[in-house]
Amino acid sequence: MNVLLALLLAIQITSITWHDGPPTLPKGTKVAVLEGDTKQPGLFTMRLNVPAGSKIAPHTHPRAERVTVLSGKVTVHLDGKDTTFTAGGFYVTPPNEPHSVTFDEESVIQLTCEGPWELRYVE
Image (cartoon, rainbow, N blue to C red):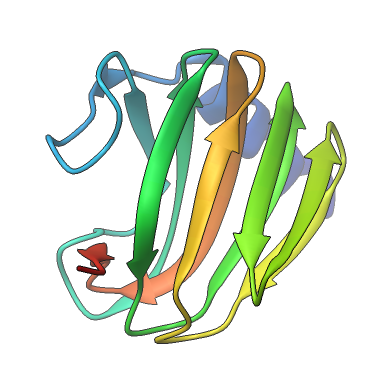
């Protein structure tokens, strides 16, 4: 049974369809939803392919984000501290906690969250 599940996931991952990201994300960002629906309540997993030099200004999310860096270099600015993550790095952004993110290199990150997904910029 586990072999069948792994085979199904491998087929899905090799056929990822990327779409242009919403206007709330940096220009050129591509998005692929692997499971679930980002606009509905419930668990979802999506990937973002973000161009080098991109920045996401200070913002919050109403629910925790679990982020895995699949490639590239990502710096998270949270609580006055900067933490850089590279491929294999993992972090959790607490709900309603202002943070910003910079992408020093073209990067692919994977988010697993409870929907609906919201990105609220802080003024």
